[in-house]
Image (cartoon, rainbow, N blue to C red):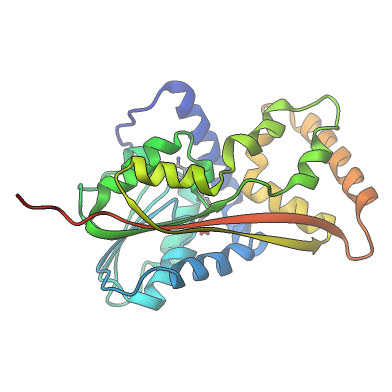
Amino acid sequence: MEAERPVSSHVHTNFESVASGFTETASDYEDAVRFNIEGAQRLALTIPPGRYQDVLDVGCGTGWATQAVIDRFRPARITGVDPAEGMLEQFQAKLGGIEGVEVTLSQTDVESMPVAEESFDLVICSMAYHWFPRKWEAARAMARALRPGGVIAILMSGRGGEQAYRDVISNIEPINYRWVGAFDGNLRSIPEMEDYLVQAGLDPIDIWTETRVRHTSVEAYMERMRVVAGHMIGDQSEAEVAEYVDKIEAKLRELSGPRGWRYEFVKLFAIARKPEATTG
Ligand SMILES: C[S@@+](CC[C@H](N)C(=O)[O-])C[C@H]1O[C@@H](n2cnc3c(N)ncnc32)[C@H](O)[C@@H]1O
């Protein structure tokens, strides 16, 4: 769907390349990023008990967060929004036929969602907020979609994660400034998230981070990077990208111990509510 997009052409390019990146890797997403399933389930578990009939899943991807919300709350209607066609196809195949839940999908970015204001009881956004190029605008767009009293639940990558990998790529020459800088551009802290929510007119209920230390093989780590963020490496030729990735892999192997490549990952969770309308 071609929706109106009130963003600058520069920002356009940004989310469109993110979207085409996710479309290219959509069929590998579920295998490479299993941790996101558990994150989506825990996000759904942290939503305050309530009756959520109309749910909006922003950056819905292949539908893990929607699945978790269906399992817990059995809403009547779910709208999934994502600019990546390939991810929406996976979503539709998986969740399009659940009895009693009406699913509507829209290929669009967070700022151009074709949804009515104040029409959702719950907005969820799992592992997508870090990709939004205008985070203040994104928070406002999601807040607008919420009914008074409605809840928003966000899970994103938090500041401080992936430091070991960042240290590696900061020293791979020629230095890929776009790739190195992407982490600071994307990751956020608790106070930053609190600001986004408050400025969007929401009342934060609970915001917290979890830091995990994981050990994995270099191959599995690089596959995860390819699937979720390969498009960020840049506009070099295929051969240049291959050479760059080879250098990274060699360095990760050199630094790996007996349990493989060790890295830290920070998850930032946030739950907030839209204040009830005041009368008088
Ligand atoms: C890591 S996936 C997460 C998918 C899903 N929510 C989950 O929990 O598995 C990130 C998703 O955000 C989407 N995305 C990226 N930029 C976006 C934007 N500007 N607006 C909405 N979604 C976006 C991507 O296309 C991708 O499907």
